[in-house]
Length: 103
Image (cartoon, rainbow, N blue to C red; front, side):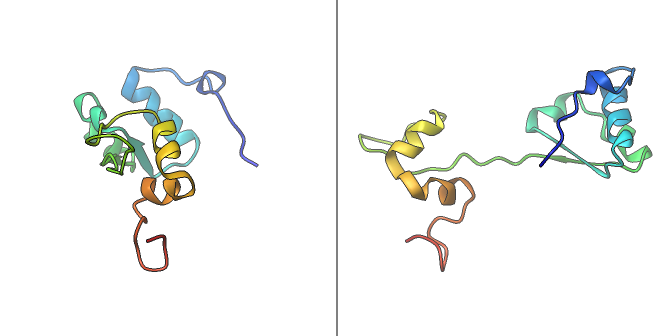
């Protein structure tokens, strides 16, 4: 079971990046994961000074067969589920069609 802790209960103050660093240090984190858009505001050097590596997501939208017409990206995961059912997890994790996986 995982505990969910709200950052508001930690009593950490600071600007956006400073507060994130303090939260990472509170939990002894050595890697901070951020979305690709975080490159616009995250100061990686500030994290590195505190021994925290920053990794930005490199999310690749999966392409899968849809029932009608050409592939339309960025629809709900429900579209994927309705089109591929049990195969959906393998598609999302990039394991679809791997040896030992689904064809």
